[in-house]
Length: 181
Image (tube, rainbow, N blue to C red; front, side):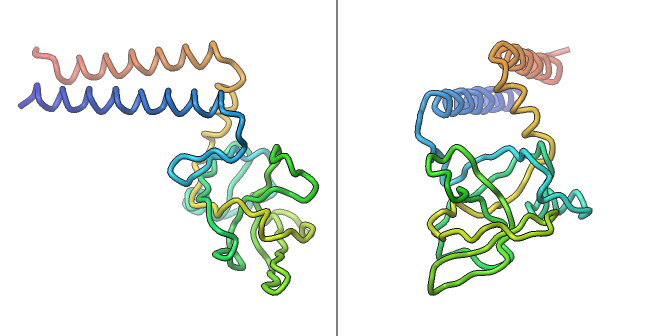
């Protein structure tokens, strides 16, 4: 029984590792700006425009977030957006998709298909945007992970070192817990 559990855990680990490496390579070498995994995109928060004094639970729910958090955004059609949703969009004048903003929808004009957003920490609304500029709705956030990803992306050697350390850690854990005494 113990060998079967070890085999299942090892198989799951290697499948997960393979998926992570394949996804990283795909994202690194694909020039498209609209990449997603199963309809979800990931963004690192660069500013504190949505920072509030809400609890850490609200940060995980994507209701508020801070610089360095990782956002998981579900790609949606613009017709599904409602007032008070936290949306990620391409700001006006940035047609190449190189910059994104994530703010709360404060008003909508359904006839003109436009909306106005504002960062929770900001005291002014953003300029009006077209519904077509919307990418998706924030599903949840993972505090601090965006900072870690930015460090890893900045140094490929660090990424390789971290990957080797994680593999060694999992190997040691599996040997410690599943080897015969």
